[in-house]
Image (cartoon, rainbow, N blue to C red; front, top):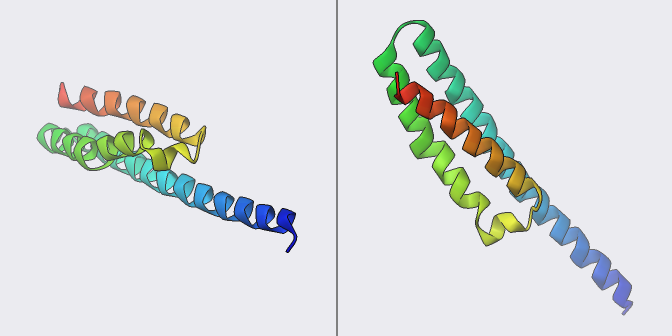
Length: 102
């Protein structure tokens, strides 16, 4: 058995796992952007209560779970991408909080 082949295979598995974790965070980030646009469109239509409800839903169901995941050991495998997605989620939370303050 050639040990370098074992090492190469292990590295490929690690890269696959890392890519999957990064893709998961990307999909949640895209969902946050879509939900944020929904809150924006509701505000533009002067449907303030609905915009607030959308913002709260986004925080509770997308942003906070992403923030928690970004701090998990699993997300650490995708370093430094977990930090980039955490920064995005923190900024998105501030935007949603702005809608809540309307």
